[in-house]
Amino acid sequence: MRMQELKINVDGKLIADIMELPDSCVIILSQGKAKVAELPAFAETKIVTHQGQVKRIRWDEGEEF
Image (cartoon, rainbow, N blue to C red; front, side, top):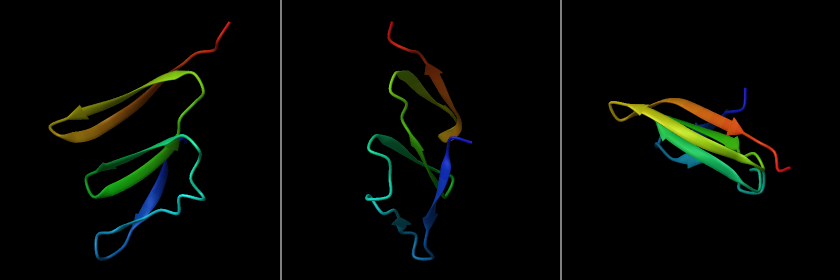
């Protein structure tokens, strides 16, 4: 899977070491969960929501010719 879970402590604080994250990434928060994914070099990333909650992440990847 492309998405990796990030830890949220009991105080509700997101724990993320920026030195361990990819250079170009997206962090998505929804339904009390946090996930991170590295962004591809050439792609369109769509975040699909339903009733204010994230339901799906879509990557339409391509490559320069």
